[in-house]
Length: 130
Image (tube, rainbow, N blue to C red; front, top):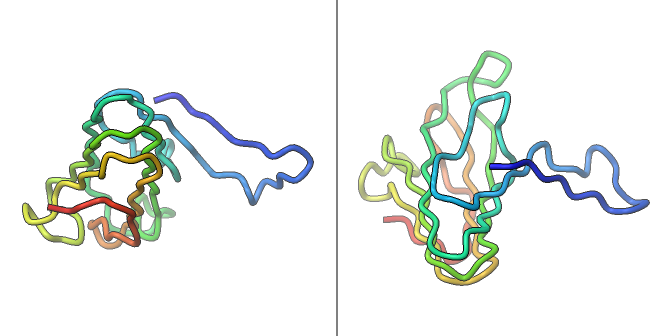
């Protein structure tokens, strides 16, 4: 997934910029390695995109973990995209909540935050966990 950064002319400050924003134009895994950890994933594939999200590592980032790190996944196309987190599932829900399915509308999103090896949903718009 290529990197992209958005700058606002004459108004941008480093603290306003996302640390890392990536485009998901094809099916695949979201890279959550600490070196490449994205703040924002923009799904740009025109048809349904199937993404996977590995379980986060427990612990603070200074010690190699993901606790407190947040990812926002946006749909920029009107398709029923999916984000799968199989073990332990979103909100530690196992198979009852391991797939987030986006409603087929531009602007739908899913926000997750890592804590103790689990992705917890912080917010979403038209994304169903099942």
